[in-house]
Image 1 (tube, rainbow, N blue to C red):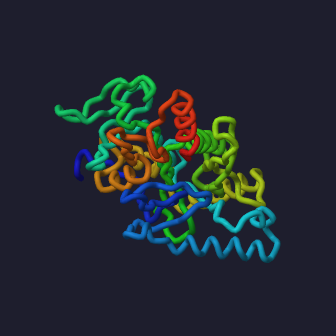
Image 2 (cartoon, helix red, strand yellow):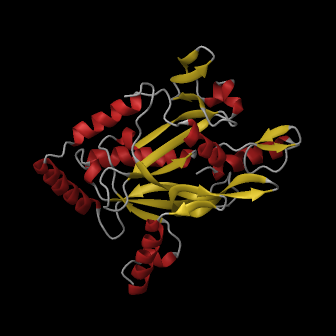
Image 3 (tube, rainbow, N blue to C red):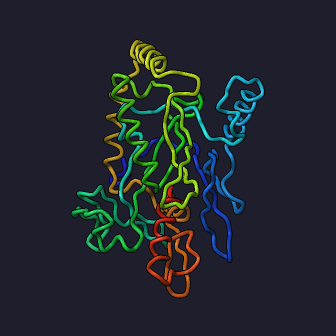
Length: 313
């Protein structure tokens, strides 16, 4: 086996809440207010839709027509997705870190957790202290929180996943909390618990009343937590009787991820940089995505920082 290569969960598709558009000759990310399921194939027009995207929309449209799903009546947009998790360990399903990428090559430069980091240097990859972006000089180049959530959608392949990537504190914090809570209340049966990925909106004083969106995990619509726990226990028992070892799967994933210094390859990193770490140049100044020109006053600086922070999902 190749050394230094992180073995990540198998991915057959993406979950996004935005898209890439061309503006003034640049490819820039645009946020959306609904989920989109795509394949891993990208063309000039964007990522190709996964067949499950249309299937889920039809299923929810039918539920609205039949009146069986009252929550679905509120919107025709895809804002909830039934999911299962691959691992029993919350930190294997959701991996979050502070990340800095080379915006030209897409290669990871530094990945840290707020205490220690792995940093690419001329002498090789080194382990160094990580003070978090607020206190790190290197972070000025564009370091930010970056989370990857792998989930199962559908029943076609028990070991394949869709990946949702985010740089938003709201989504990362909510998802991490939910996963720990669900693991606790289910008695460790997180991998067999039926769940639902849900897009939520909120507004804050800093967002000036404009809704911002973040991702949450709940029990499926129309079900209760007690019902979900009962199903999880039954499925866990069925798996054990069939010889399925969840503990061994988690350990294999843990060892595979630890094999490499960085999870993203340069090939994946290029798409990540385009979507989450895009440079925008105004004059000779590089500005965060969503800013059209450098702010000229302290008030404008504060407002733009607040807007950029709250637009991240």
